[in-house]
Amino acid sequence: MMEKNKFLLLTIMLVSFLFVGIVAAKEADDACSSADLSMLNKEAANIKVTYVPVRIPVKTDDPETEGKETMENVLDMKVFNMTDKFILRFTYSGDRIKEDSFYRNITHVGKDGAITIRQHGIGRVINYAVTVISSYGTCSGREIRTIRITLPKFNYYSTLAACKGIQDYYLCQPYITSDIDTATFYDKVEQYKAKLLDNSNIEVEEDNNSVVSEALTGIKKNKYLVVGIIVAIGVITTIVILKRKKSEA
Image 1 (tube, rainbow, N blue to C red):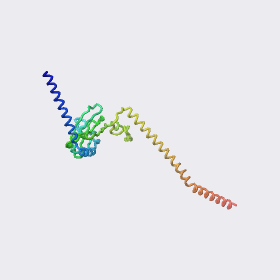
Image 2: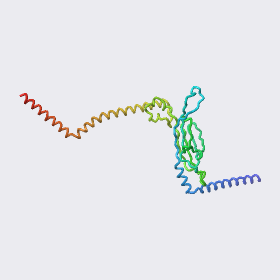
Image 3: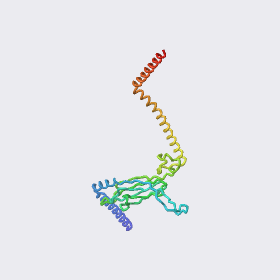
Image 4: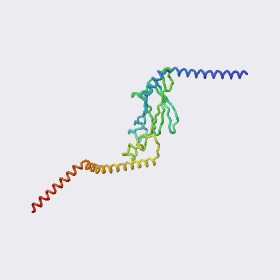
Protein backbone atom coordinates (compact mmCIF):
# COMPACT_ATOMS: atom_id res chain seq x y z
CA MET A 1 0.00 0.00 0.00
CA MET A 2 2.82 2.31 0.96
CA GLU A 3 4.57 1.57 -2.35
CA LYS A 4 1.41 2.47 -4.26
CA ASN A 5 1.13 5.76 -2.36
CA LYS A 6 4.75 6.62 -3.14
CA PHE A 7 4.20 5.87 -6.82
CA LEU A 8 1.05 8.00 -6.85
CA LEU A 9 2.86 10.85 -5.11
CA LEU A 10 5.75 10.76 -7.58
CA THR A 11 3.31 10.71 -10.50
CA ILE A 12 1.47 13.75 -9.13
CA MET A 13 4.77 15.62 -8.60
CA LEU A 14 5.95 14.83 -12.13
CA VAL A 15 2.70 15.99 -13.68
CA SER A 16 2.87 19.16 -11.57
CA PHE A 17 6.39 19.94 -12.73
CA LEU A 18 5.40 19.42 -16.37
CA PHE A 19 2.37 21.66 -15.94
CA VAL A 20 4.43 24.40 -14.32
CA GLY A 21 7.00 24.15 -17.12
CA ILE A 22 4.36 24.46 -19.81
CA VAL A 23 2.76 27.45 -18.07
CA ALA A 24 6.15 29.13 -17.61
CA ALA A 25 7.05 28.60 -21.29
CA LYS A 26 3.69 30.02 -22.38
CA GLU A 27 4.09 33.05 -20.11
CA ALA A 28 7.61 33.65 -21.48
CA ASP A 29 6.31 33.41 -25.03
CA ASP A 30 3.46 35.80 -24.27
CA ALA A 31 5.95 38.21 -22.66
CA CYS A 32 7.49 38.88 -26.11
CA SER A 33 5.47 41.94 -27.06
CA SER A 34 4.22 42.53 -30.57
CA ALA A 35 6.35 45.69 -30.77
CA ASP A 36 9.53 43.80 -29.87
CA LEU A 37 8.63 40.99 -32.24
CA SER A 38 8.02 43.45 -35.07
CA MET A 39 11.38 45.10 -34.42
CA LEU A 40 13.15 41.73 -34.39
CA ASN A 41 11.46 40.66 -37.63
CA LYS A 42 12.64 43.85 -39.35
CA GLU A 43 16.23 43.44 -38.18
CA ALA A 44 16.28 39.73 -39.00
CA ALA A 45 15.04 40.48 -42.53
CA ASN A 46 18.29 42.41 -43.15
CA ILE A 47 20.47 39.39 -42.39
CA LYS A 48 21.88 38.04 -45.65
CA VAL A 49 23.76 34.80 -46.30
CA THR A 50 25.94 34.19 -49.34
CA TYR A 51 29.13 32.37 -50.31
CA VAL A 52 32.37 33.46 -51.98
CA PRO A 53 34.88 31.18 -53.79
CA VAL A 54 38.40 31.76 -52.44
CA ARG A 55 41.87 30.40 -53.22
CA ILE A 56 44.18 30.23 -50.22
CA PRO A 57 47.83 29.17 -49.89
CA VAL A 58 48.40 25.91 -48.01
CA LYS A 59 51.45 24.41 -46.35
CA THR A 60 52.62 20.99 -47.40
CA ASP A 61 55.16 18.50 -46.10
CA ASP A 62 55.66 17.02 -49.56
CA PRO A 63 59.36 17.48 -50.51
CA GLU A 64 58.42 17.62 -54.20
CA THR A 65 56.42 20.82 -53.67
CA GLU A 66 58.83 22.41 -51.20
CA GLY A 67 59.44 26.04 -52.04
CA LYS A 68 56.42 26.15 -54.36
CA GLU A 69 53.16 27.88 -53.55
CA THR A 70 50.29 25.42 -53.31
CA MET A 71 46.77 26.80 -53.51
CA GLU A 72 43.52 25.35 -52.23
CA ASN A 73 39.99 26.14 -53.41
CA VAL A 74 37.60 26.86 -50.54
CA LEU A 75 34.20 28.46 -50.08
CA ASP A 76 33.60 31.20 -47.53
CA MET A 77 29.98 31.33 -46.41
CA LYS A 78 29.33 34.84 -45.12
CA VAL A 79 26.52 36.24 -42.97
CA PHE A 80 26.06 40.00 -43.17
CA ASN A 81 24.11 42.48 -41.01
CA MET A 82 24.34 40.42 -37.83
CA THR A 83 23.36 42.28 -34.62
CA ASP A 84 23.68 41.64 -30.89
CA LYS A 85 19.96 40.82 -30.69
CA PHE A 86 20.44 37.41 -32.30
CA ILE A 87 22.36 34.19 -32.25
CA LEU A 88 22.60 31.95 -35.30
CA ARG A 89 22.20 28.19 -35.46
CA PHE A 90 23.87 26.60 -38.49
CA THR A 91 22.44 23.18 -39.35
CA TYR A 92 24.16 21.40 -42.23
CA SER A 93 23.61 18.16 -44.14
CA GLY A 94 24.44 16.54 -47.46
CA ASP A 95 25.44 13.37 -49.27
CA ARG A 96 27.33 11.15 -46.81
CA ILE A 97 27.28 14.03 -44.29
CA LYS A 98 25.60 13.46 -40.94
CA GLU A 99 23.33 16.34 -39.97
CA ASP A 100 24.84 18.52 -37.26
CA SER A 101 24.63 22.04 -35.85
CA PHE A 102 26.79 24.80 -34.39
CA TYR A 103 26.17 28.35 -33.19
CA ARG A 104 27.59 31.82 -33.86
CA ASN A 105 26.87 35.28 -32.38
CA ILE A 106 27.95 38.91 -32.71
CA THR A 107 31.40 38.13 -31.28
CA HIS A 108 32.21 36.11 -34.40
CA VAL A 109 31.80 39.08 -36.77
CA GLY A 110 35.07 39.79 -38.60
CA LYS A 111 36.71 42.96 -39.86
CA ASP A 112 34.65 42.78 -43.06
CA GLY A 113 31.45 43.00 -41.01
CA ALA A 114 30.48 39.39 -41.66
CA ILE A 115 30.47 36.07 -39.86
CA THR A 116 32.58 33.77 -42.04
CA ILE A 117 32.30 29.97 -42.15
CA ARG A 118 35.16 28.56 -44.23
CA GLN A 119 34.30 25.35 -46.07
CA HIS A 120 37.27 23.12 -46.86
CA GLY A 121 37.05 19.87 -48.82
CA ILE A 122 34.52 21.23 -51.30
CA GLY A 123 34.06 17.97 -53.16
CA ARG A 124 30.45 17.62 -52.01
CA VAL A 125 27.31 19.74 -52.06
CA ILE A 126 26.31 20.90 -48.56
CA ASN A 127 22.91 22.28 -47.56
CA TYR A 128 22.74 24.83 -44.76
CA ALA A 129 19.77 26.05 -42.72
CA VAL A 130 20.71 29.23 -40.84
CA THR A 131 18.16 29.85 -38.09
CA VAL A 132 18.03 33.37 -36.62
CA ILE A 133 17.20 33.12 -32.90
CA SER A 134 16.41 36.10 -30.68
CA SER A 135 18.65 36.84 -27.70
CA TYR A 136 16.76 40.05 -26.92
CA GLY A 137 14.97 40.54 -23.58
CA THR A 138 11.78 38.58 -23.07
CA CYS A 139 11.92 37.37 -26.69
CA SER A 140 15.10 35.37 -26.02
CA GLY A 141 15.06 31.90 -27.51
CA ARG A 142 12.39 32.70 -30.07
CA GLU A 143 13.17 31.59 -33.62
CA ILE A 144 12.60 34.54 -35.95
CA ARG A 145 13.45 33.18 -39.41
CA THR A 146 15.40 30.47 -41.23
CA ILE A 147 17.64 31.13 -44.24
CA ARG A 148 18.50 28.20 -46.51
CA ILE A 149 21.54 28.11 -48.76
CA THR A 150 23.28 25.40 -50.79
CA LEU A 151 27.05 25.44 -51.07
CA PRO A 152 28.09 23.93 -54.44
CA LYS A 153 31.04 21.65 -54.98
CA PHE A 154 34.16 22.41 -56.99
CA ASN A 155 33.78 21.22 -60.58
CA TYR A 156 36.93 19.38 -61.67
CA TYR A 157 35.58 19.21 -65.24
CA SER A 158 35.91 23.00 -65.52
CA THR A 159 39.70 22.60 -65.61
CA LEU A 160 39.65 20.24 -68.62
CA ALA A 161 40.49 21.23 -72.21
CA ALA A 162 36.96 20.22 -73.24
CA CYS A 163 35.64 23.34 -71.49
CA LYS A 164 37.96 25.75 -73.29
CA GLY A 165 35.92 28.48 -74.95
CA ILE A 166 32.62 27.40 -73.38
CA GLN A 167 33.16 28.44 -69.77
CA ASP A 168 29.63 29.86 -69.73
CA TYR A 169 28.17 26.34 -70.14
CA TYR A 170 26.74 25.17 -66.83
CA LEU A 171 28.83 21.96 -66.74
CA CYS A 172 31.99 24.04 -67.25
CA GLN A 173 31.32 26.42 -64.36
CA PRO A 174 33.90 26.26 -61.52
CA TYR A 175 31.16 25.36 -59.00
CA ILE A 176 28.07 23.23 -59.60
CA THR A 177 25.36 21.55 -57.53
CA SER A 178 24.78 18.51 -59.76
CA ASP A 179 26.58 15.17 -59.99
CA ILE A 180 27.54 13.80 -63.41
CA ASP A 181 29.79 11.01 -64.62
CA THR A 182 32.67 11.58 -67.05
CA ALA A 183 31.05 9.90 -70.07
CA THR A 184 27.87 11.95 -69.70
CA PHE A 185 29.92 15.13 -69.25
CA TYR A 186 31.78 14.68 -72.55
CA ASP A 187 28.56 13.71 -74.33
CA LYS A 188 26.73 16.83 -73.15
CA VAL A 189 29.69 19.08 -73.96
CA GLU A 190 29.85 17.72 -77.54
CA GLN A 191 26.10 18.27 -77.92
CA TYR A 192 26.47 21.83 -76.66
CA LYS A 193 29.34 22.60 -79.06
CA ALA A 194 27.39 21.11 -81.98
CA LYS A 195 24.42 23.30 -81.10
CA LEU A 196 26.66 26.39 -81.00
CA LEU A 197 28.05 25.49 -84.43
CA ASP A 198 24.56 25.04 -85.91
CA ASN A 199 23.45 28.40 -84.52
CA SER A 200 26.57 30.04 -85.94
CA ASN A 201 25.84 28.65 -89.45
CA ILE A 202 22.26 29.85 -89.25
CA GLU A 203 23.42 33.35 -88.32
CA VAL A 204 25.85 33.45 -91.28
CA GLU A 205 23.10 32.41 -93.70
CA GLU A 206 20.79 34.99 -92.22
CA ASP A 207 23.47 37.67 -92.66
CA ASN A 208 23.96 36.73 -96.35
CA ASN A 209 20.22 36.69 -96.97
CA SER A 210 19.83 39.98 -95.18
CA VAL A 211 22.21 41.70 -97.66
CA VAL A 212 20.06 40.61 -100.61
CA SER A 213 16.90 41.38 -98.69
CA GLU A 214 18.09 44.87 -97.81
CA ALA A 215 19.01 45.53 -101.45
CA LEU A 216 15.57 44.44 -102.68
CA THR A 217 13.90 46.47 -99.94
CA GLY A 218 15.91 49.53 -101.00
CA ILE A 219 14.83 49.08 -104.61
CA LYS A 220 11.17 48.76 -103.58
CA LYS A 221 11.32 51.88 -101.43
CA ASN A 222 12.94 53.93 -104.22
CA LYS A 223 11.28 52.30 -107.21
CA TYR A 224 10.33 55.63 -108.87
CA LEU A 225 13.88 56.90 -108.63
CA VAL A 226 15.21 53.65 -110.04
CA VAL A 227 12.73 53.79 -112.97
CA GLY A 228 13.72 57.41 -113.66
CA ILE A 229 17.40 56.51 -113.75
CA ILE A 230 16.73 53.61 -116.13
CA VAL A 231 14.67 55.87 -118.46
CA ALA A 232 17.35 58.58 -118.39
CA ILE A 233 20.04 56.04 -119.27
CA GLY A 234 17.86 54.80 -122.16
CA VAL A 235 17.29 58.32 -123.51
CA ILE A 236 20.99 59.21 -123.31
CA THR A 237 21.93 55.93 -125.02
CA THR A 238 19.41 56.62 -127.85
CA ILE A 239 20.74 60.15 -128.43
CA VAL A 240 24.32 58.92 -128.60
CA ILE A 241 23.37 56.22 -131.11
CA LEU A 242 21.49 58.73 -133.33
CA LYS A 243 24.38 61.17 -133.30
CA ARG A 244 26.79 58.43 -134.33
CA LYS A 245 24.51 57.45 -137.24
CA LYS A 246 24.29 61.08 -138.47
CA SER A 247 28.03 61.54 -138.28
CA GLU A 248 28.59 58.36 -140.26
CA ALA A 249 26.13 59.51 -142.93
